[in-house]
Length: 75
Image (cartoon, rainbow, N blue to C red):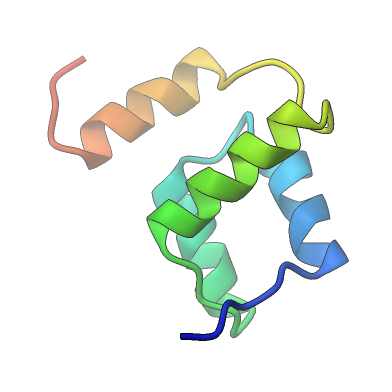
């Protein structure tokens, strides 16, 4: 199985929206861009970007709350 590489504009999108978008919302953005990515792929790329120091900090409280609601968990 061939891996799809990450384009620079996709990496910039992850860096820009990491703190304010949930993984589900990021997946929807990639679908609209006609570059669908699954949850595991996005999480792995975020982990690599954090390790490289290109993503700093974490999610906002609002983003964490939305994420929990999307997963069906009460906040």
